Amino acid sequence: MALAFSSADTTLFLNSSPQWKSSLGPGWIGTKLLGKGGFGVAGLFEYHGPASSAPAITQIVVKMSEAQLPLFPDPQVFPKSKIDEGITLRRLAACKSQHIVRIYGGNRLGDRFGEMGEVVRIFLEYCPGGDVGRFLSGYGESPLEPLEEVDVWALFYCMALGVVVMARGTEDLKAEEWDGVEKFGELVHFDLKPDNVFLGAKNRDHVRMPVAKVCLIVLSRWL
Image (cartoon, rainbow, N blue to C red; front, side):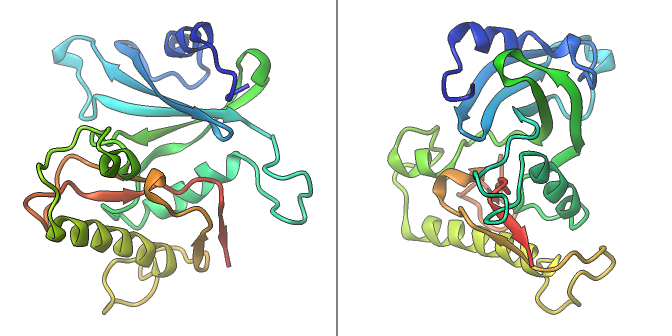
């Protein structure tokens, strides 16, 4: 369904939030389809309600996938479904890293959508810079002109810290692993590429580059 997501499906998706079992609440409007593919669809939802009732976060990415669809025909090869992404991100949220795309809450279940049948939705942090793949190709909203070597190293640094969090539960190499956070083991990302790294609004460690954040899609596994 996701690969054949039509313009009519897009409109239905962006206008469907009032009917969700786990709704964003009044004032939220779907404004843009951000992407679609074999792992689901993602849209930007923004708060357009009264300023007096505005929440602290006014932009959220909603990712919707078929809930129980296995990723591979043989579950013994990779026994994962779309629900595992929300579970993994929820665990990593406790690490409070700025280099992992943050999830708000956990999996939202209990709804159906067209030919997708039962769906799972997760609410994610919005990264206004888009993914690094589009940024490096010149199709994203690049805040830099031109891109310098120091900026490339800043990207690598952010991605390295994201991987460190997946392995140790903390960005601090001097701290104990998973200190104060429930330990689940080392997390391995099997699809780490520019398209799965996103650019946030700002970077406290580098004045030019926005912070890069690793997106934990379902192709990951705890060891």
